[in-house]
Length: 324
Image (cartoon, rainbow, N blue to C red; front, side):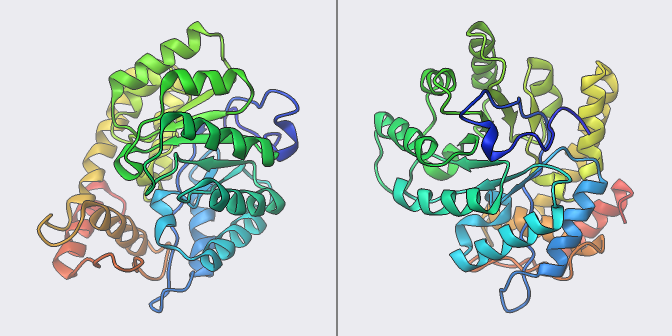
């Protein structure tokens, strides 16, 4: 385990500076039953698998959790199951992702009452939101919810980028504890890291969501990673992070390239048959089922499930990686 500890609690912020969030914080998949209920037993096993793999925290109800597909009742089951099962072993961040501020605040208040270590919010979406309104959105969440707030820059899904000057202004004002950067733009990430360091905002955590370039991001100064592929191989990302922290960059690169080959599972389905997200989430869940962690590789509708040849692609990739 690394720098993030259970002291990152709802009471630690905004009354004082939140500890920097570092390390491997996977966005945990949400196992489902064939009738689309939360598979609680599989979820517990998945959480145990992550912790045993050496992760530094857990992020539930993010993109890899299929948060956009889950009704509020499912979200509540996930939150209750994970927090009770983890019982303080590692910090748990909860996604409070929804379209606009009042909806997000409903999720955020429930997350804080449940005892999360932090909440994660995107910019508003569906609405045509001005950058000034994004800032109001984030300030409103922080003002009304006493938990560390992490911004989630996910332009592919919310169709707007989070402005760097705004992020650093909010960090300086104690509004934001950190950022998950899922822009896929390494140049932009580097610019943000340099600007953060120039401003002396050392407690503002920046984690990359780009699981294929983690070694590069860490060398640029990122504090950690939120890897969807970490569901399938948490030990690999923990190993990569450990090598990077030790300055063993050759070993870090080698591990990153091994994980890149494993990530080819997401190419299971052709783009003419289903969306990229359906293929990736279906592949993660198929891999977890093949590894004996979850009982079913069910994804939430309207995502199209993988067929047998596509599942076989996942199986062959896992065999090549030595994971089954």
